[in-house]
Structure formats: structure tokens, C-alpha cells
Image 1 (cartoon, rainbow, N blue to C red):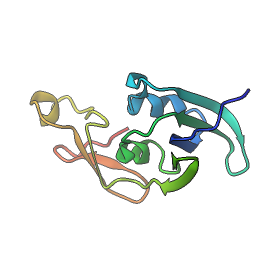
Image 2: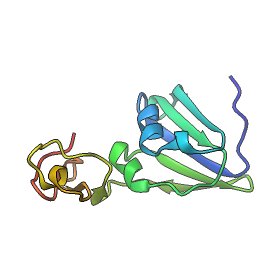
Image 3: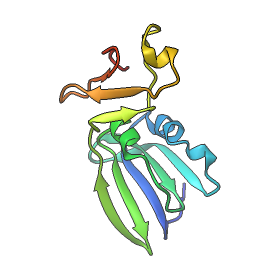
Length: 135
């Protein structure tokens, strides 16, 4: 399989195998008008297998979404053939990334943002309104 090099764009590397489509959907990459390639189960020395997403255009990425889904993702921003790597970390707060599962939560009853806060170093997020744990 051959996927061309990117002159200007973004490569999301080291995505946990099986999470590529989840990242694709969460970042709404289907709405882009440029080429997007999803490579699943690519061989990796670091992870055995991994997913990779290549975007053939420079776009704004929500790094909080990436950090929430998979904080091991490496973001490679490519400009004129030269790559700049950015590490992704667990965000302290996520807004409208996941929905609160508590049917009684005010975020489900009112027209307000779904906000979750990181509560430990393991990646546990809880709703700021009702403290329900995010899945």
C-alpha cells in the first residue's frame, strides 16, 4: 500500500490500534474537503500495531479531544516538507467532547455545555455539575 508524503498537513501518529476511527469522528474529519487517510493496524516498533491519520491540509485541531481519547498520540505538523512534533497531554477540562450520562444532570436538562474535569492522573473525568464519571 502506498500513501504519498505530505508537503503541508498533519499526521496523527501512535494512535492506539482501533482508535483511529474514533479520533476521525471526534475531530469531525469527515467534514473536511481535503484528503484524509486512515491507516489501521500499521506495524510499530513502539506499540506493535498502531493507527495513523494523515490530513493533507493544515487545519486547526482540538488537542483536548485528542488528549482525552488517546494522550499518547503524536501530532506532526508538516510545513514545506518539514515536520514539527507536538505531544498531546490529558487536558484538565474538556467541553462538549462527551455527554454526561446522568439523566438528572443539569447539562442534560438545560441548554449548557457538557463540561468534565480531570480528577486524577489516570485519566478519570467527572462532570463539573453532578460529578458523574465520563466513559
